[in-house]
Amino acid sequence: MEILARFTRALRHSNAVDQRSGVSARFSIAGAETVAAAALHRASIQGEDESVARVVDLETAVDVLGGKIEFETGEEG
Image 1: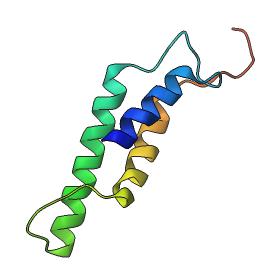
Image 2: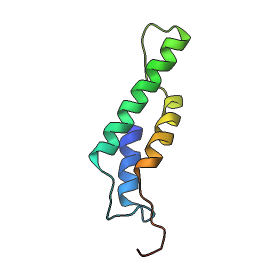
Image 3: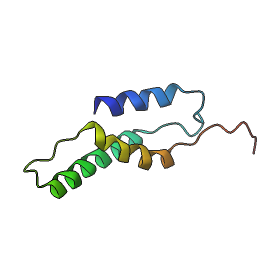
């Protein structure tokens, strides 16, 4: 979760992100939910007794969260 928190903070301060739309708290929540779901899915497929989030589970979060950010395009309108 620390990685998601740092990622969110970095996006909030990035010039590439449209500051008018911002990065909401919902962004962090969606990231945490996605990582948890990916960990649960991986654990069930591999027959693990307990699901634990791993770095590999972040890949899914990046794919999902990419659609929740508006980037600056340099265009007005």
